[in-house]
Length: 89
Image (cartoon, rainbow, N blue to C red):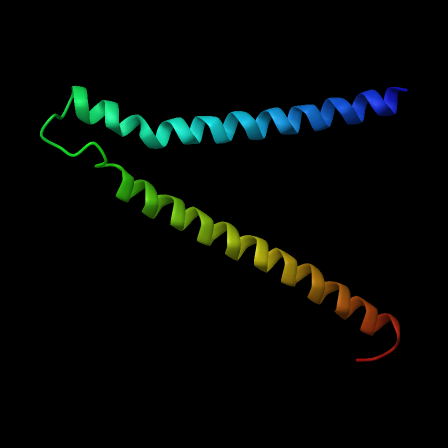
């Protein structure tokens, strides 16, 4: 019974975390409309969309490179250990 409760607790926490992070990110993207309206009326309401697009692109490229390198490292390491264990050099 404790296994079921632990798994349920961890799954619920991961789902809640993803929901909160995505919700906050969705609100923060559009907060520049309010900033432009109240603080900088001469600017467009979407003046922060371009920097946010560039920043998110850089983050996605970095994550892709990191996860791709991690995957390749694990696959190549696994293949190397298998070849060495069979006596091949």
